[in-house]
Length: 187
Image 1: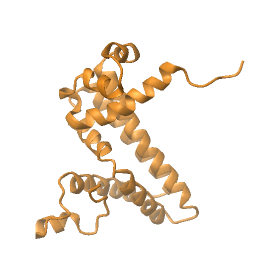
Image 2 (image 1 turned 90 degrees about the horizontal axis):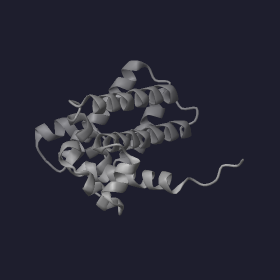
Image 3 (image 1 turned 30 degrees about the vertical axis):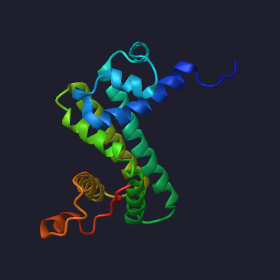
Image 4 (image 1 turned 60 degrees about the horizontal axis):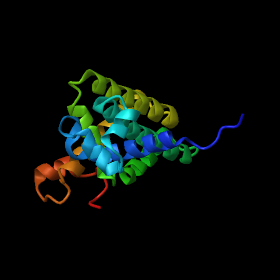
């Protein structure tokens, strides 16, 4: 028996998750109704509930998709660096991430997920995402734990700079945070 193309339900599920990333990025888990995701995906709320057991499962699927995109980008860029040193691989990953987060919804969803970590299932999803990201960066870069920690910390600082739009601010405090940090400018 040969496997055929993905079922319509699988394709719809993937499309709904993609739209959920964007919709949940706007208002987060607590303030986003499933109807908003359904509307954005062009399906009925009942169909969303047929594919996902509830809003929590839909949000977690969106968070997992977000982390998967980041991990795929880090892995691809790290492998493309070839025989580079660990620091050079981390630099390649940084540049790839800067390009990836031009889609502000990825950052916004991560921030919303972190702020909803009072929900145990969301906290677990964030922890799994971070675990998988750290493991992928470590494996592909060959960097030591302190270098990976610094890489992750700079990534979080990049999120802050981008979300708070600190780059255009010409003041010492803003320069202290943003100087030397690569990040995507306004789209």
